[in-house]
Image 1 (cartoon, rainbow, N blue to C red):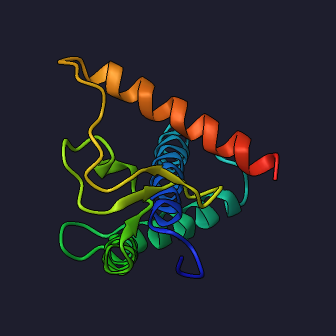
Image 2 (tube, rainbow, N blue to C red):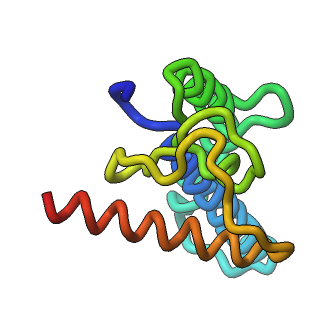
Length: 144
């Protein structure tokens, strides 16, 4: 396996970044609304800090094709696929996946390449099978 953060870990970082972006936007809106209503402390350092955090997150999150955090995720996914595996769970539910799917924590295989999933017309059944496999490989890695 490649060293460094996995594609799944970069995806989690992107999710955290978007959460911080939305929370800081909310704080900015509340702060601006309070300022307009005349409820203002003498200094507003929290608004400046929040604005800085918001702008930084917005720059990293980007928009459309200009999204640095997505570049990291896509780059790592390509590197992993070139090595014959992926940690991105987005492809784990495909009917026929060309590479092994590896758990990003335990670094053990969840699903082999071209291995069929449970035959079901319900997505929830496939999800339950993968969740069970993740639980099993993580339990096995703790019991080394």
